[in-house]
Amino acid sequence: MTASSRGPAARPARANPSGKASTKALDGGTARRTVLPSGLRIVTESIPSTRSASLGIWVGIGSRDETPAMSGASHFLEHLLFKGTHKRTALQISAEIEAVGGETNAFTTKEYTCYYARVLDTDLPLAVDVLCDAVADSLLDPADVEIERGVILEEIAMHEDEPSDEVHDVFTETIFGNHPLGRLISGTEESITPMSRSQINGFYRRRYTAPHIVVAAAGNLEHATVVRLVRKALAGTALDSSGADPAAPRTGSKRVRHQKPHTAVRNRDTEQAHVVLGGVGIGRLDERRFALGVLNNVLGGGMSSRLFQEIREKRGLAYSVYSYASQYADAGLFGVYAGCAPGKVEEVLDITRAELERVAAKGLTAEEIARGKGMVKGSYVLGLEDSGSRMSRLAKSELLYGALMSVDELLHRVDAVTADDVDAIANDLLNQPMSLAVVGPFDEAAFPER
Image (cartoon, rainbow, N blue to C red; front, side, top):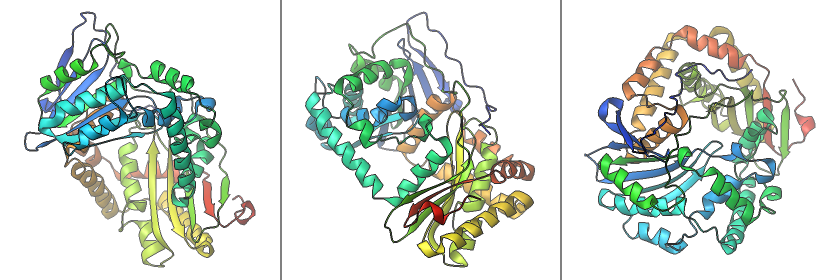
């Protein structure tokens, strides 16, 4: 089973032969979008009631864009871009933002990388200059490459010491195998150790191009001012060009192959066992994503969810239990996580399987569907209470979907979910053969294939 491509069509990139920036209003006029001649996009939302501003530079490049030999390059680069430019040292990059009480950081995902800052509204010009400088004009000094290599190797080792995190990586690998979506975002010791400065710099220069970049900002700001600041900060850099169109949202070029369902066990001498049971999900443009959101919340999205009630509240078998869905451009996965004592794993898995089978066969009650809709809507709207989340919404809409769905439209789409819609997605996802990932004091023989 692969993700469906149904859903709103991605907005096609349009040529800009005039060489001038083009601007238009979004979301009923509360947000604005400008496309520069380079193909770089700037999206903003003005929130006059706040005294802060959040800025993000989003690059549509992530770990799935790497070859096996370059696994971890995006994450490696994320570290290095804060290490110094022709204008600033690493200390100056951090000190200039911290001196005004701001914060800056970055993160890498499988499909994009984000560099962001949050400052007082009056310090937005500084944040624009610092972040644009770091992303567009990093030195990638050989000495810094070696320092960060050591930091990343320690980060990988630290991650392996967190079995509750590691089990999700094991599960993802059981679904996608050797496909780039199945690999670790951080890379591995075997890929990071030999990666050269020349290889990383080549990846940087080839991939970090203006058409793949979105600059997003939200807070007490004016769109025209942000556009002017970005153009000034990027002047004379590799991102200051013309005659290019924005890259269209990623859709996937071919079928994402999945592994045959199986069990994967990582033997770790831990006090608690960590398990994820699940299978193939849906892509982020699939129309069924709204029904899946409702289903996910009822199954394992909160303290009132079926799995939480059955496993923790009624039987006390686990402290943490939840379900989740990960969605990519052309694929996805759905899983249930639980952390429990090793001796209780089989009981937890039996209850989980029984509950999934029950939902697949009988669906959800009207009361549960209403509660699931409320949870989806509430978490979305309440998650937009600060400038950082507003900035993230703008960027993801532009980079991943090619269009900004208004809050009202999203709420309408959730309200429109029917019992039949939930039944259909439950039947598709919960009736399929499932994979199992386990991290704990076990060997493979402890979990015979079902």
